[in-house]
Image (cartoon, rainbow, N blue to C red; front, side, top):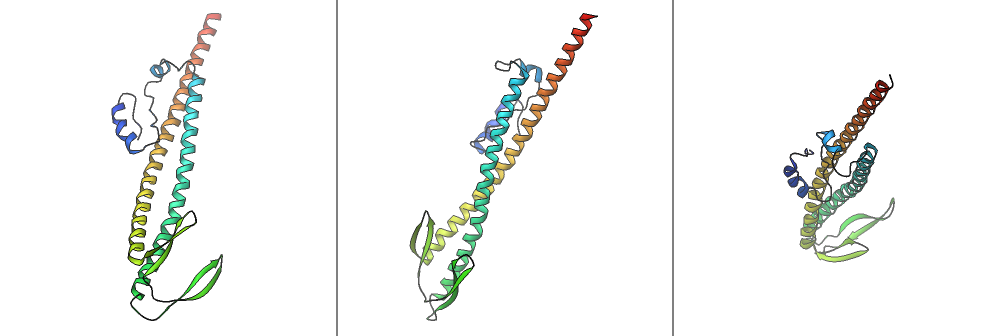
Length: 195
């Protein structure tokens, strides 16, 4: 949750936890906030807040894309681990393993795989390496744990970002309402002076 201006020290812990996402400061006292240097007019402040809001939207888009990528990687890693476990069971037998493998989208081919203790893994960027089954399993388990941890971290960052949206939206509404009240008060004073 966002902090108020008065409790800025509590926000230091959140900044370390959510690196790269600046924390939105809740404007408790709009009058005092508008008297700060750089807050000359309500329009200028609203522009700054809107710019901050747009930055949060951009960050949300990037985090959502990372989340989708991780959500598609995790099932692939699980499936590869299952295949490796199956191959590990079959490596001590002499019978070849019958399987179907993907040639292209919706095109499979029957294959007979002899017992082996080596597998090739795609690492990305068109790189494939040969591993022992045990090494491959250890690598994939490590990748699975990292992907799961990163997904949890992304969820936390997205929750934090939603809080920043809310705080920024509330700040914008408070500054806008302050400006409307100020203008109506000025108009009342001007009309009272004319009468």
